[in-house]
Image (cartoon, rainbow, N blue to C red; front, side):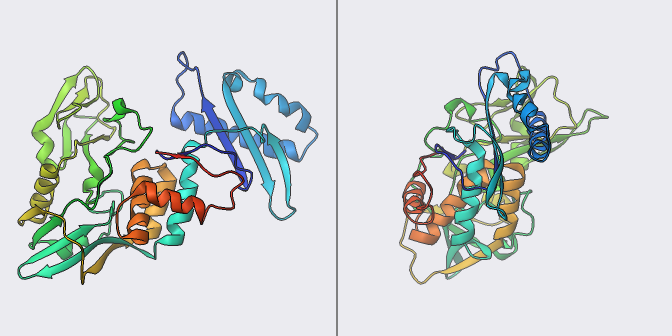
Length: 342
């Protein structure tokens, strides 16, 4: 949910729409994307045909009339703008900021994602979290963590993550929305419960992680979760063909339970100790995380990537410190300093 408030004229193309005042209009994400893609194609052909002038009136279309829409098409070979519509206006880039997250994470992280720092002490293995979002994340298969830790006695070291679960600017009442999952040092199952069903039989087929199977109330008035507990609600008219994803309420006790049940071993939280003489264990390829984040505009992965960059830079999980450094270094050549609001 990272946002940057500034003007970008350095990207090859930009297409940003801010839907405001649409209380009487509901446009799905796919519908909005289709409209914008159509708009893009129209402008592409407009730049290469006599229709250019007439298509400038596209902004008068009722679809865009109540919105703030901008578009810039830039040809890097000829170094010229082919077409622009309100290209000099200021916008809130919203999820386009993930392009910056990708840029900085690709520069800072290596080929693989660091899962944790670890140290083996007798029969136990001590872990210092890095914010790796891949552990048992169904959208990021191939993590090596499970096989490495299964059956071991694990000590999860706390307190290296001192930030709030949510970032500045997050809407407090979006806590049960799939796009607003709590940030964490040791995320697991992408910090959400997934509910799947069979559209033919109407049966619920999967509640994962399974420890939540008795915490779901079906036939509720609306979809969501209790604000301070892991009581989940599924609305009466739920289409069982749709897979639901609801963030769980994160606590140290819950993480301990999830890790213990998953690894079939004893897992405990322990007070913070400085990681000395530790080794780093790697989980998945960084490219797989980048790809997933950009393809579906995954807020959770974007936030966790910033935490991973923080660990890589400072050995701590501090988003604010990391963004301040990135603004002054890797992003210093932007026309205006970005204002990150997570």
